[in-house]
Image (cartoon, rainbow, N blue to C red):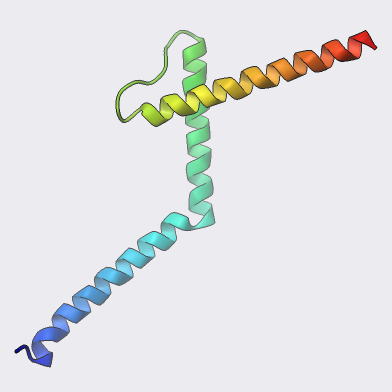
Length: 95
């Protein structure tokens, strides 16, 4: 049977590991961190979409799958926005 002296270091190590995990989790969900990650992903998607439009193609590979998806979404938003703008101008001209 283990004595309290033998168990204390293990308990302290478990507490330290739990505290480190909790700190990491709190950092991941902090609004500033989430906003920074969103901003970075949006900028990367715009850059990838611009690269596609200029003939560079979309990112490929397993690690770039989310970048390609985000670039396609950015292109879709741009095309949809352009279509709405054109429709808006055309309907105002008819009046």
